[in-house]
Image 1 (cartoon, one colour):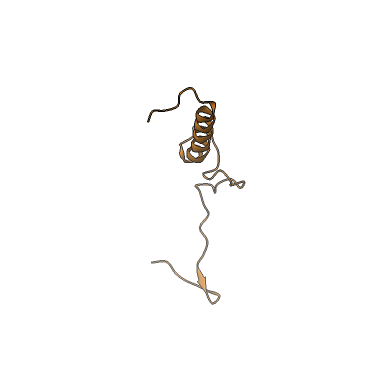
Image 2: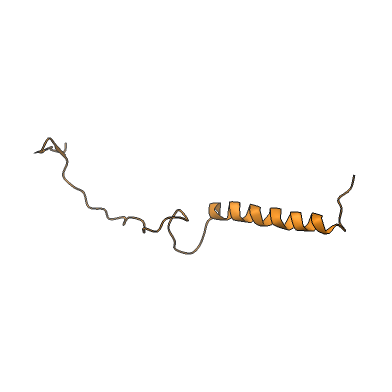
Length: 65
């Protein structure tokens, strides 16, 4: 059995399969533009200089070693 090179249905199915593969693999590829890590995230990522807060248990401040 050989590949049906002259069949239009073969080419239509091949193009649809290639497009589906592209849309599945595209979010997994690294991007050079600045964007959130996940494609569906709308909130920007947290800043790297996070502010440390005091740790409390039952309203009492704990000391750090």
